[in-house]
Every structure is written in structure tokens, then in C-alpha cells.
View 1 (spheres, rainbow, N blue to C red):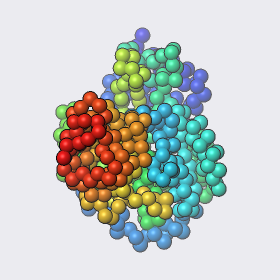
View 2: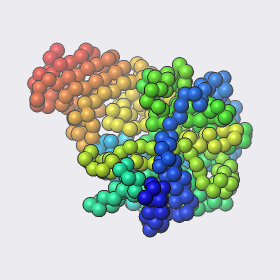
View 3: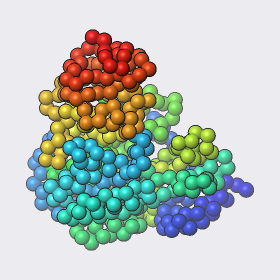
View 4: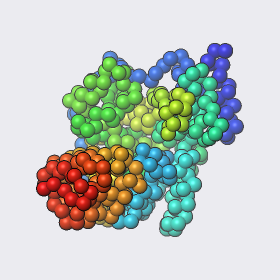
Length: 467
């Protein structure tokens, strides 16, 4: 049997799950690419760097704020809430993790939207939907946000290109198709038409774990007044951003996003060249919903560049069968819209929490929490704070809480912090400069209350430290 003949098995499996024809058609399009050997790679020869002069600077767009305020009634904030935060050891939606002052990501996003006076919609995944609805019910908000579901794709066996099966846990036979699915999900759920019927034309889309991504009146005004169909927020790349997707210009003239998974192995150095490819995608996007509806109705599917991720069927069991996961990135839609643009934004609009390292930074005094906004502390010593926590002792949220609890050290004067070994912190600890803390013993070491750390520490006992 030819691999392509397996497609009917995938379609039957998807139909049995109640997935709509647009979803099965979209998967079929990608599956044909998989079996013909397409990898989704994007070569340097196909793209050129973007001229910085082409990119508007958000700091220079204040004149559009009035326009933005006038069209807030025609705008929606869409939050992507599909992640479980498995890399942090979470088993529920990451947005339900407590961030600051007893508030979760979801609490803060709800308050931000209410304060801005903008409608909120949340896209959940099949893994986060019930948890999120339960949490929202407990909040008793003045206006319940709109919610809709991300789709799912069947995993593909790398052995024979058949649908992957895992009887002990059939749920693992499916994967979220990446946040690029948002466009199809908006359409098939009826949410796109509902918003248009309500007079909503402009959507701002961002991830739930990025609390810097608020509805900005100047950006909204700039987007609406210029009639752009699509706008990507980008930021200047630094050495710490080399793994993120970068903006480029395709040889066909359109802007394009190249993700790390789309870079050929022998072109990694070029991909990471921040002097050449200067801008990375913050995953904060603006889209005109009328243009989106027209795109889908014209082409029947939203055909984004494919990202083919080799995985194991059970991500927690490296001995489970090897599979392919077909995914797409929502920022890749920049290449689908004639007239799409990008805007350079400050780093204050981009501080996602992907790991416990990030959580420590966000929970510390390196950031301030005011008026439901998380902002960089103006008194911070460094514009970049590098945190590296020993994953064996801080990689999962329960381990992190056990060692920090409510005693997050002061990092406002810190430039970098590396912790190796098992170290627990008591309250009112201050860390200054570039610091390495290393526990060479087998027992847990303790940083005592009120300690000020200005030099590297090597800890030998669980109760004390070398001075």
C-alpha cells in the first residue's frame, strides 16, 4: 500500500471525532506534503533580510492613540490558552498558574481587558477547555469572555505513515496543531462570523503567558487607520533570542516568518545571525477579520507553512513509538496577506513565561505590578536579566515552590543568576550583580533570611554558606 492510501484512515478517524470538513481538508493538505518528503524547511536562498527602515517603530506611533480609542468598540483581544505548561510540570492550563499577588495569568488578563474596555475571547485546546471554564465560573466576571476550541490533528506514525495508535491512552494519539490553527478555529466555531456580526473588525492576538501583551491604543489606531490586513509585532533580536522565529522577505516579495524548526541544519549559523535577521516574532498579532473571512472563503483552507515535528507518541516516554506532529505557527500568516506589515515594539510587550526561570524573574522585583499591568522596574540595574536554575531542583513548579515559596529574592540589582544544586531561599534575600550559587553537598543548602549576595557562593553544608 502506498503511504498516500492511508489518508482515508486519517479522515475517518477525524470524522469520528466530529472534526469539521475544513479541518480534515487542512490536515489532508499537510499529510500529502509529509508523504512526498516535504520537510517544511525554508532555505536562506529563498529569503532576504528585512530592511529596518521598512518597519515602523511603535514608540513613534503615539499620534494614532486617539484613533485607537475610537475603534476600541470594534476590537477584540483574543488570548491563546491551549498550553498545559508540561515543561514546567503542570497538568492544568498554564494560565491558571499564580503569577503575582495571588493572581493567575487568567485573572490578570481578565482584569486588563476589563480595564481597557475591550471584548475578550479565549481559544482553549482540548486539554485546557474544562479547567478554564471552571476557573472562569469561579471568577464571576462582569462580562464572561467568549470562548472557542482549538482543533486537533492525529499524530502520524513515522514507521509507516499510518495514524498513530496508543490504546493505553488514546488521547495521546492527537496533538494540538499549533497556534496557526486559530484562523481555522475562528471560522469553524462560528466565532469569526459572530464577531463580525457584532461589529468587531480588529483582533489583537497574543499568548496567555505573555502579560506584556496588552491592548495598545496607538498600535490599534495605526493598524486600523492604515487599513492593514495583518500586522506582526516584532522586536530586536538579542543573543538570547537566536532560537526564536525571525522575520524575512520571501523572494516573492512578501514578508515571511521562518521558525527554528524550518531552518536546515547546515544553515543554523545564518538563522542565528542577529545582525542579518534583526527581528523576531513576539507572537503578538493584529488581524482584520474581514480580510481573514475573505481569505478563508476564497481558498477554502488556511494553508500556512508546515512545521513537521518529530516526537515520541507519549512525550513523557522516550521509548514510545516515534511519530510526526503536523503543526503551524500563527505568525506565518504574514505571508498570506497582500499588504501585511510589521511593527517594532519594545521588549516591555514581550516577556513570556515558558520555564520556571522566567517565572522567577516575573515574580521578583525586577518587575512591578501596577494597574493590572506587569512592567519592568525602572530601578533595575540591567535591561537583560539572565536566569539559569538547575532543572533537577527547579525545573518543575512543585520543586520551584518548595525552594522559593513566598520568599522570592530581590533581583532588581541582579544582572545574571545561576543556581547549581539544591538551594532553598528564606525571606528578604537580595542578589546583586552576576552571581553563581553552587551547592556541592548532597543535602539541601539554605540561604538565610536577610542575606545580601554580591559575590559567587559555594555552599558546603545544608545550614550555612562559605563567605
